Length: 92
Image (cartoon, rainbow, N blue to C red; front, side, top):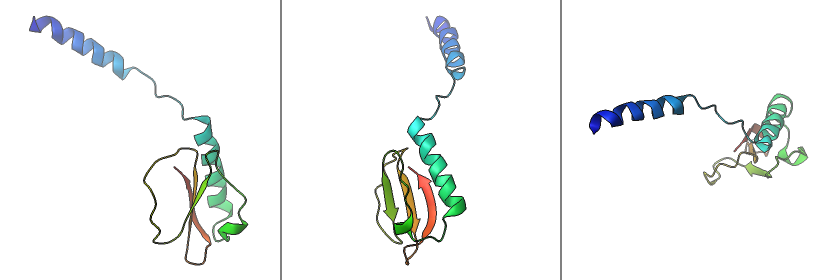
């Protein structure tokens, strides 16, 4: 009985390895594009002057601020320095 299970298990593993990775959701792609644009053009800008949001909203994170660890692919996160200027933009 054991001998017939091993080939079946090997076949199942081989087929599982052939699966393609699903594409990221469209909202994540839109958010990433916005974050990259902000990273390249808006660093140092007061975050209140930045008119950008991700499909799932935006979150402004100040220094030493507690934040939840939940991952929301379409949410734009804007990290600021003590003066409220953008230091980092990313999605999640």
